[in-house]
Length: 267
Image 1 (tube, helix red, strand yellow):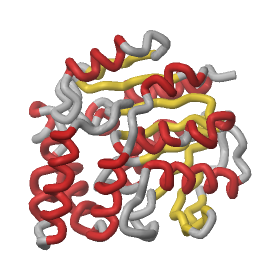
Image 2 (spheres, rainbow, N blue to C red; image 1 turned 135 degrees about the vertical axis):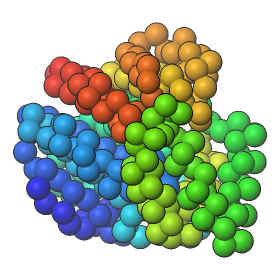
Image 3 (spheres, rainbow, N blue to C red; image 1 turned 90 degrees about the vertical axis):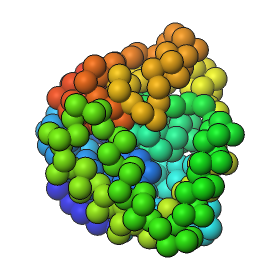
Image 4 (tube, rainbow, N blue to C red; image 1 turned 90 degrees about the horizontal axis):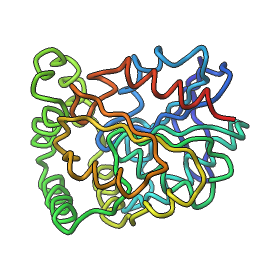
């Protein structure tokens, strides 16, 4: 396993690469996270799979680059990172915001993508209500109140029945939020506000794809997930019956098995 920085164009990217495996899967973390959220999950995938984890710009120790990080910019960073690693074909697992990045990669990297797996993520652009909420978060950060996000966001990500059992992980995520650069959080929020819907593009892409949803997801209510499923009859679907937004923590074995089955089944 190798940890290093790779230049994606003009952007240095912090990555970890297990280096060996029959197929390659790239794990993209969500908003206010970093590659560290995947540490234990990687152990469930490596061996049969080569696993690459990446700190997206503005998160972890990858640098902030500009006032807004569009999903297209982040997608190019990931695609150029994979080129620099010399990996031609790979599957992408995107958690939440990481799913938005995976979808944006279809613009320029579709020929390299064997599968797209959206883990607690959506294909639709933000509603006006969600855009307004993101703008309020930007103002909160600018006012020096990121600790409010650190206190509230991690708990909301887990199903109520899992909060006590996984309290150590919740505390770890809170710490990740606190150490994420303010400028990076603001840049990512701006990029998510600007993102476009990609459901039709995914449906017509010909790329096999899997949706993984949690039954207790506060951020993606069941009716939203059901609508997304109905709009894409080509998608494979896994419901995590005891999970919220953080299924790879809450039901990791089910997530890992679904990912391995999808990726290793790819031609």
